[in-house]
Image (cartoon, rainbow, N blue to C red):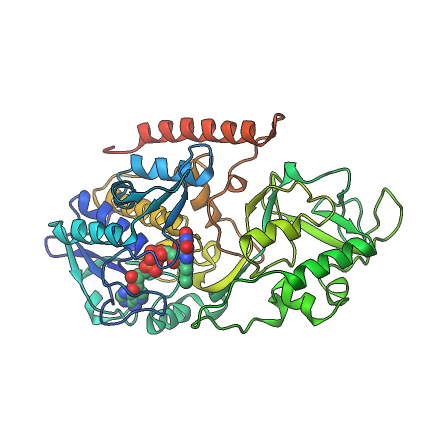
Length: 447
Ligand SMILES: Cc1cc2nc3c(=O)[nH]c(=O)nc-3n(C[C@H](O)[C@H](O)[C@H](O)COP(=O)(O)OP(=O)(O)OC[C@H]3O[C@@H](n4cnc5c(N)ncnc54)[C@H](O)[C@@H]3O)c2cc1C
């Protein structure tokens, strides 16, 4: 659809974090005027503290820089699309082995300077209170990139627009394991009371194994909640270690209950069962049902590998629970990230349901490129799901019973089943992604 764009119209981008800066930059580089609204330094979220833009609020690492990792591939693709964040990251990197880590002050300063120096961007240091805020008047399009800690007033307004049940303030992520790393000599297929069904993989535990897992969960180190993070969780979504602390049998009567599941190797109902639910149609990745957790990352790997069948598990994503404002994207957004309930308003970054610095920036970059193409009357097709960017965007339009934010991982791409171990498989995913991205690039305008 053509967008009416005259001399004094502009695109409003709300939030000058990673997604907002990328989006504004991509638009501006195409000659589209942008008004970029940022509430800092008048107001800081509880995690922000630097008045520069694109602040990294926690770690200074943008994770793996290896081209055979999913996040490494995403970075490559972003660089090829002219990413401001990747350019700043490379210019301010600090030694960190195979990871791309940055000097956060220099990183934020460089992005701020490039944004403020751009003739097509006007940076306005004001908080946007709602989608009807008078400051947005005259905008041809609006992009909300206000992040996981969006200003409360705007977040409430968004909640009103999308419907209360489709905007969340907390996420509860269970770990995801690679299917090929589950020991199928131990795990068995079957849904409760239906051994024929292949929706779940079940890891059976005998009493001793269960007690060992329970002890591990009770003794493990958790990530301390930041002071602004409410430690109030919905009863239906408690961290697995909290359930474990309630009593030795709480898990066995809760998410690990064995009822209706018969281990075909013994013909018996196990003492307890950890169920794994398919993450994608190809069943290349599975999440651990009920294992949302605040355990520290190294502890998660140690403890979850105590589960029979997961001794050699390769974790595509570890569990977490933290404050996070995000929408049920498959329900409320079009594949182009436009609010179904409010045409002309788009979301970008973590608030869409992507997770992580790199993913948030990638989402903003994609949207900026997409909107610029629309404004300039050309079309930008979605990248194929075999690419890292395409897989990430596909996550946002794949309906799920319990939609949860996701970082980029190979489990979001169409599966490749290959013998030869983890390194070989990664290489195959990476080669396919590189090829698909190169072909897509040839088809897109003005590259
Ligand atoms: C506490 C915390 C720690 C995290 N740690 C990591 C980590 O270590 N590694 C990782 O990969 N990811 C991490 N994340 C997840 C996520 O990657 C980051 O939050 C990332 O910065 C999200 O990018 P974004 O652009 O969507 O939002 P942000 O980078 O948060 O940018 C949003 C911007 O919008 C501004 N804003 C908000 N509301 C308004 C408004 N109403 N009007 C105007 N401006 C507004 C904010 O001030 C901010 O500058 C963390 C998240 C949180 C909450």
